[in-house]
Image (cartoon, rainbow, N blue to C red; front, top):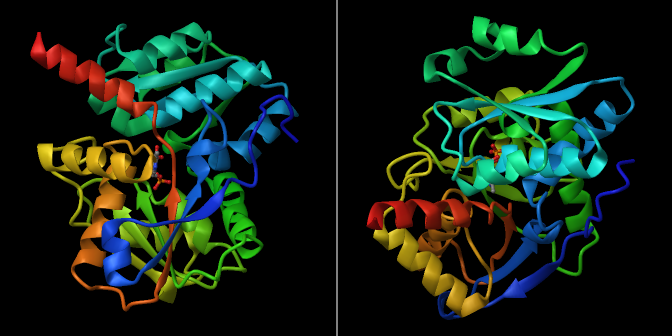
Amino acid sequence: MVSHLDVNLPSPVYPIETTLTVAKGINLYIKRDDLIHPLVSGNKWRKLKYNLEKIKVTNCDCAITFGGAFSNHIHATAAACFALNIPSAAIIRGEIDLNNPTLKYCISTGMKLYPISRTAYQLKENAPEVQYILSKYQNPIIIPEGGTNELALRGVAEIIDEVVVANMPVPDIIVLAAGTGGTTAGLMSSSSLLSKIIAISSLKSDYLYDEIIKLTKGKNKDKLTVLTDYHFGGYAKWDQSLLDFITSFEKETDIALDHVYNGKAMYALMDMIANGKFAPKTTILYLHTGGIQGKNGLEYMLQKKRR
Ligand SMILES: Cc1ncc(COP(=O)(O)O)c(C=O)c1O
């Protein structure tokens, strides 16, 4: 077991009420995976857990991963590797702005950053640039972009085990944000899953549903709905209506939401509730997947814009 990360598990589950959920008679619960750890929070911990355990028992001289400049995954990998004494590196899509708070933090943990062009990035391990970086290490272990692999799915499936024994009725529906679909696939790979799942794509995607089904090899396929109309222009894109929603939700519930994933997914959920998509008395569990470090990135970009 990974031992020197002090994680708060099982993550808390509790009911939340907003004016809207009360008006529509919806029983909304939230699972606060964002509270698992201040730096390795949400789906990041779930996805990294077994990957880190594997790395710890090998003679790996560097855990190498991939991500964008504001990536939650890069940030969490840097924090976890630092805590566990694993040397780490990240191959970053595009140029590096050293003042970006996510990368600043990664550097402070000792993570080595390798920016490569967007074209090379698309090729991942097949790019000559990446091969060159890998050749600098004796025994590197690659954690894929977003941390999605079989070990990640195993870690995520444990959420369902926690929900089964949580102090709440079996949810009719679980709602969560999706990017690569790994977290959704992890939930669906659980044999204890009784709920339907609604995954809200944070990016423009017409392949996410197929991607998830591929990852789960079709398990629990009939339980899945993927919604792709709540991306607000694409990955990490946002508009004022999204930011306003996040502010008012945070005021009403005291629960922080990031603008890349959970802001969009919670917006989608509230929009569906407002539009009567769920019958009164439906029990919905919202899985908060973390990503709050991304708020610093947003603030940084807003400040840059104002200058
Ligand atoms: C906070 C947060 N929520 C949700 C997701 C989407 O997860 P997945 O890529 O597993 O669909 C991510 C990205 O990994 C994330 O950082």
